[in-house]
Image 1 (cartoon, helix red, strand yellow):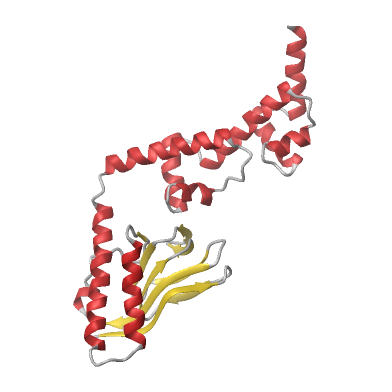
Image 2 (tube, helix red, strand yellow; image 1 turned 180 degrees about the vertical axis):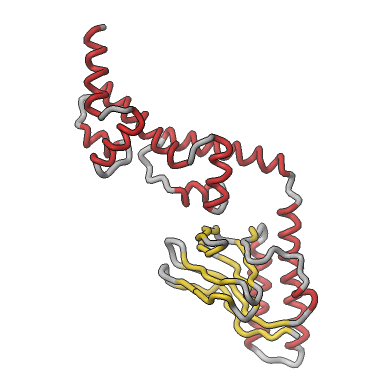
Length: 266
């Protein structure tokens, strides 16, 4: 038996959308069509569009939009079917979808069959649910079997490219969420592999790059310190000075005076 309670296809919500169900009574499958945040294992995890997450009855459900309007496909249902209850799919965690058009098609069929009665409705829905779970299982299998070395090498390449971009554009408004999205990773996983690779956090590297740029301007230009702060990505000159001193053990003015004296002696 599978009883569909509600289906949403290409459903759009405002950018302040949030759904907190708690420990739900039903099965819930969400297919994100825009970035979203899910509360998983005690923290908010940012997921890019084209992800799927399966909630079984009893799993805590809390999710919200991520800086933009929220769009998704979803289905809420109850079941006692073995192929669903004993699924090998990952539960309560986001699954990356490589072929979104397939899931758009499946959710569209679910939406149509659930809202327009016909004599074969129950049989058709059963087949569509089986197809849905088969396709999700395929995604889980494909993700599990990606060669770990290839994945690691790919991440290293992408991380190095990201760092190069940071060094070239330190004044950009870099955020952890944005950097994670460049590798199509959730925030927590991105931070973990970044620190493992470089030994520091991604934001610490951003700050280092900004301070290095500031050092250059302090040494070769006569621009005001507050203007240099803006060039280096700081809207507040006091914040810039505190950061600068934490990295160099001297204020921007002390750093400028020191290097001016060294040039004079030369």
